[in-house]
Length: 255
Image (cartoon, rainbow, N blue to C red; front, side, top):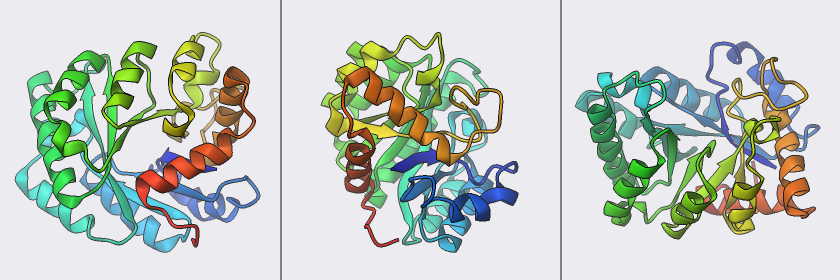
């Protein structure tokens, strides 16, 4: 399996990263994508990707930090993206739940970074919360910038909107939240074609049941796979989603 969205660059996981990666084989993981959310975390994501063979990186500015995005930061992110193990741009998007940046600013910065990602020829990792309708509208208007694909990370929208994002050529990723008792996402999971599914943990956040309340780790991605297999009746979700991730992010088997 591949954990397509983790944060080994988080200060809580940095001291544990070497041991976490060393256990990938035992934990059923072949690779993980270490995702940046601001300049410092993007630098660390690349640094860790270069240090650990099965780890890849994504760079970008999260909507929480859109208010502080500058052209100079974009330039630095572009330089970071030149590293061979950077396989995506993100996480970028819209977060109208916390509203830590002005909504108009979030929208502006998302579109600026979408253009940057297209110029870098990288797939995009989208963080969207309480803004799926607007995100869909903006992506439809900018479909030409999605030619390298992308993923709706930690998807929390409806089944109907999931189908619309897939029609735009995007993948849909599910994490530990689908294991929560009140998740009610079975219909959404079934709405996404297996060829468009991805697994993730978003660790150290969103720890799946039965470890909810503890620090999340990449190894728990298997619990997400088990939940999706139970919902879909398929026994090959780990294999299928690994294939999907390798195709989207251009990850070779030799790691």
